[in-house]
Length: 276
Ligand SMILES: NC(=O)c1ccc[n+]([C@@H]2O[C@H](COP(=O)([O-])OP(=O)(O)OC[C@H]3O[C@@H](n4cnc5c(N)ncnc54)[C@H](OP(=O)(O)O)[C@@H]3O)[C@@H](O)[C@H]2O)c1
Image 1 (cartoon, rainbow, N blue to C red):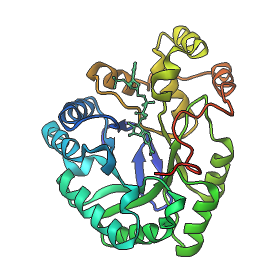
Image 2 (image 1 turned 120 degrees about the horizontal axis):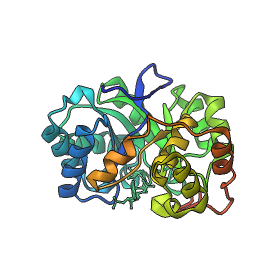
Image 3 (image 1 turned 180 degrees about the vertical axis):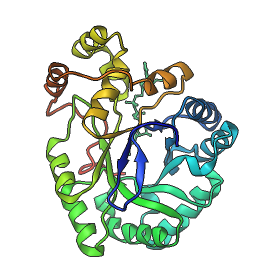
C-alpha cells in the first residue's frame, strides 16, 4: 500500500483511512473515477451491490495497473438479499461483478429491522469470512443495540460500522458504543453530500490554512480517527481530497467544527424508521 494513514481493526487486519466512495456513480464513470483515485495514491474503494457499479469498479482497478492485493475493496449486502443463503449468494454475485475472488470488507448495508433478518445475514458474513470470500466483515447503519445483539449471538464483532457522519451530524452516542465495543467508525457522506462545503465556519478554517473546504472536512474526520470515504467523480477533486497530509487542524479549528453538531443535521434516512 502507498504511504497513508491506516486504522487497525479488531480482527488484526488494517484499512487505509481514506477511501473513494462511488455511490451515484454509473459503471462507465466508476471506471474513470477508480482509476484516477488509484493513480493518485488511494488504495481503498467503497462500493455496494445497490450502487450498480461493481463491474465498473473492477474495471477501474484493472485499468489502474495497481495490483489487486494492494487495494482495499469494500462492498455491501443489499437489503433485499438479507438472510443466510441469500447473503451467501449475493456475495458471490458481487465478487463476480468485481472480477475478484475476495473482498477486503463485506458489510450489511442497512439493518432493515422490519425484515427481521440482520442476525441471519450476520451469520452468513461470519461464514464468508471463514471461507476467505471476505477478509473482514462489518455493518453499516447499525444502532448500538443491533451491534450488541449480533455480537452476543455469534461472538463475532463487526470490524466497523459505516454510518452517516459529518460535522453537522456527529453521532456522539453511537461513537461511544463503538469505543466500548472495540468497533471502528467509518463516515459516510463525510462532506454532507457537498452541503457542508459552503459552510462559513468550514470556509474560514480553509482560508486560514490555504486549503479547500473539502480538505478541512476530510482532515476533521482523520483527526477523529474515523475512516472516511469522500465521493467524487471529478479527477481534480479526487486528487484534492487525498492531499490532506500536509496540514493539521489546531484546537480552535477542531472546537469550531465540533460545535456544528446538530440534532437535526442528518441528511440521509434514519436507519430505525427506513422501510427499505
Ligand atoms: N452505507 C451507506 O448507507 C452509505 C450511504 C451514503 C453514502 N455511502 C458511501 O459514502 C460515500 C460518500 O458519501 P456521499 O457520496 O453521500 O457524499 P460526500 O462524499 O459527502 O459528498 C459527495 C459530493 O461532494 C462533491 N465533492 C466531492 N469532493 C469535492 C471537492 N473537493 N470539492 C467540491 N465538491 C466535492 C461530489 O461531487 P462530484 O462527484 O460531482 O465531484 C459530490 O456531489 C458514498 O459514495 C458511498 O460510498 C454509504
